[in-house]
Amino acid sequence: MDKIRQYAKENYIPIIRDETAVYLVKVVKEKNPQNILEIGTAIGYSGLLMLENSKANLWTIEKDEKRCEMAKENFNRFNMQNRVKIFNDDASNVLEELVKEGTKFDMVFLDGPKGQYKRYYPLIKQLLQKQGVLFTDNVYLQGLVKQTGTIPHKHRSMVRNLKEFLVELQQDQDFETTIYDIDDGFSISYFKK
Image (cartoon, rainbow, N blue to C red):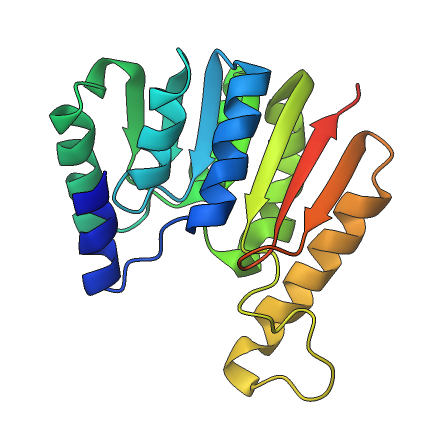
């Protein structure tokens, strides 16, 4: 795992930060999920963390073909390939298909394109089992979501979408949500239905 983390750092591949990973593992151990959905595989680091700390099966989505192949290699290296189903596709397509199939998950780890969280949210809600948990990473987008004043143009729509997502998530009576101001910010939402 240290080698994967080092490779990600050297190659500027975003993976879960250390303190956030501690909370993710804690939630996985507490929830003991059977089926986990991960949006944003990258090279498989967070997926491996969740698999190593549970008996769950993992469905994971990664749009980038090269990263997807590296994730497969990493899952194989850890003998986890039989517990993983990787989708090399846009998350919206996969989420819509999973909803159509009636697939349900005990846990969703949302760590894909930040500007799309709001768009994925209604689909994720349909995919979560009763009492399921949604763990969302990078909700502060390098501090830009909390920043007052002018946001750089290239980040404006992402920041706006993330802010709207956080408001929607916190106001949704079906969830009990806590936002943590740790690392790049993350939220843990328990589905009360």
